[in-house]
Amino acid sequence: MSFPQFKDIISFSNTEISEAIIETENELFNLRFKKATRQSFKSHEVKHSKRRLAQLKTLLTARLEKSKQNEEINK
Image (tube, rainbow, N blue to C red; front, side, top):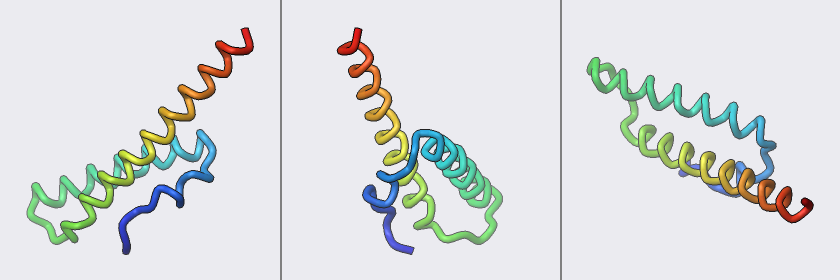
């Protein structure tokens, strides 16, 4: 698995982004839980999950701010 790319998520809709955020947060929780209980897991997946979560949140925030600005312009 390679590093998550921003260009892979740019085509998502806002609802798909929200669902992906929830899914990634759950994945990150499970990885942290495995670490705490000393179960085997691939440690690089924590870094990948954190990066993907940050990318998703950044994209969603940018889109929401852009739509908010468009609303203010149209008033």
